[in-house]
Length: 252
Image (cartoon, rainbow, N blue to C red):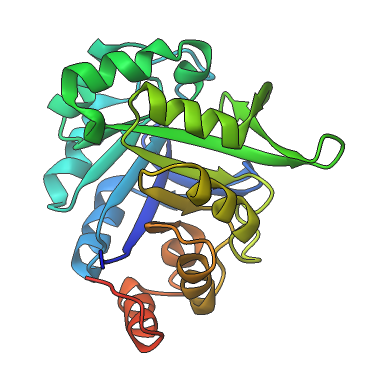
């Protein structure tokens, strides 16, 4: 049985970590490299770094900030934001990323997933999906541009297609749950893990210890990502792993 991964996330805006609710009302949290170093010390299994305004501002991710973060951690580092080409992926990998996360660019150019997987291997290409429940159509819609742009894509179908194109992992954020601390969207992750055969990381909604055990057990995901509860010291990674061990969940 593979150990489940606990993954803090740094949402970075112009060199500072920010956190909001439902992708808006962002508050400053601190310096990415300092926060990353703290998570390394706490025993995080991986770290996700997302340049959350790069795509909307039509710029590339800030390499200098990524290099500083990479120099402070020894765990796998996934970096996303502002990726439009294989060359952009290569720049992030050279800066210290182990994996690259593509979202908006993959929506507009799905061939980018295949091109990245062919050049660097599927394990380096993470398809990031921002999903929001649409009550009218009874499906999860995919959003691009940092949650600002609704697309016609169905999140479950897009996940399946992304894997067929070469994505080695999915990082799926529930926009409805983001920053709410009301628990992960179990229904979304159950549907996803039934649809694909690659690792799925759940993101959005974590508020208490039991949320982790629930998303691993009922959502069947491989990794659980959280930001607010870790950034503001409400939970530590040690707390989470101790609780999961008690619940019989395999962790590192």
